[in-house]
Amino acid sequence: MQRLTTISLMVALSFAFAGCFESGSEDSPPPAVEPPPTGFVADGATYYQTNCATCHKAGQDDTTNAFGAADLAQKQDMITNDMSSYDQTTGFNMMLSINNVPDQRVADLKAYLESVPQVVAFHGQ
Image (tube, rainbow, N blue to C red):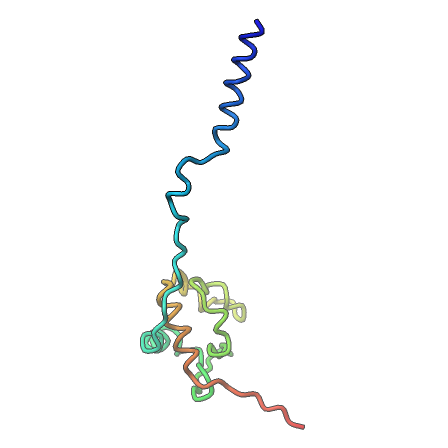
């Protein structure tokens, strides 16, 4: 009986410790983290003109500003793959269709917005 208990204990311990050690873990490198895509200014300008320029201005030289829409050059941190919930000003969400934007288009739009002259606030004395 003691021998059976010892064997059972050894089997149980071997199963318990089997998951603690990975065999061959030194052979396989960790999965690579894919860097974000590089944005292209010209492609971002095209995307902006096609999808954003009707309502949003971009920088100091742009006079567009429909419905009080934000200057995108000052809101680059808000540019994401899904901007459908950003319009909180009216009963009709005009940004609803701007969702599922590909990573490359987001990078292109940000690159374009970084390239335009920014509005400089003047603080009088």
